[in-house]
Image (tube, rainbow, N blue to C red; front, side, top):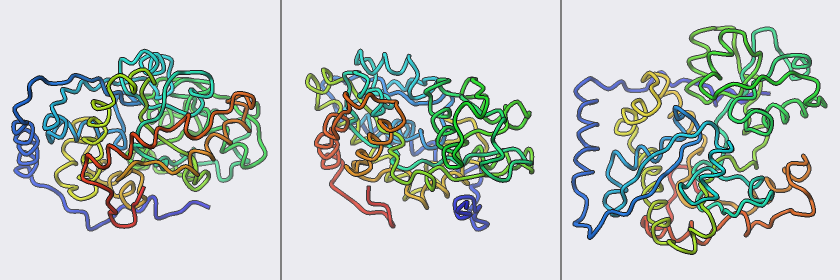
Length: 352
């Protein structure tokens, strides 16, 4: 049954005045201007998994706007990909042209990369469905979204997991590929009957078509699944570990600020996602309450192992080529980044 707390919109949320919005932008500009006297700015491309990004993906935007990269002498270019596991993103990771979201599946299939930091260990998405769908069994014969990479992409894999919970197979439904930007419009227009939506889009979906509703929260369906981890090529890790460490440290600082200073980060998230304030604030509440963003390494060896085992059992990774936790996640590098960000912290109940 759906955990309703994931979708409670707090009536006590404070609304910023226009002057506060301008002030928030000014803080970001001021922070960027306080960069140290660097001998040279180190350049790096940081990928985000969706174009435009969802709220959960905005950590690099926050880090850039608030000067956390600049104070570490890093000049960041943020690159948007059409799905975290898209071919373009995988090529960027393998070639060392950007740090991007990297999965155990890519590593198990031979991509010479490692996860270096868990941006968001827990999935924030709800599996949203049309009004007439009441149970998972009702998905039989329906049109399910396969945005973000088609067959093998995130939405396809999540649809498969939802179907499995009612002993259905992927052949029992029709998967419809489309760009990631088409997830919400496709559901609202009735082009698909079900899709995994991020919290801000859950809010907008209900607003635009009240009959749409969450069938299951993905983190409840797969609580041990490792959702989003940044990765880099193994050659890059060996060549410039310090740059990668400092880049992660800046985003760790950004994640901690996201939890602690909502009014400071919401305007940045609005600009990055192009979504309205009320939807962003709803997503912020859902994701901070459920520890979606990491505050430390974002890694738990048990979570990584479960994800690997799940990929093997689904046939996404050949059992003979099953990677180890250490092959998938460079936890030591993530720990070095945590130390560079001031050491481990706990924020509320969030510890990962």
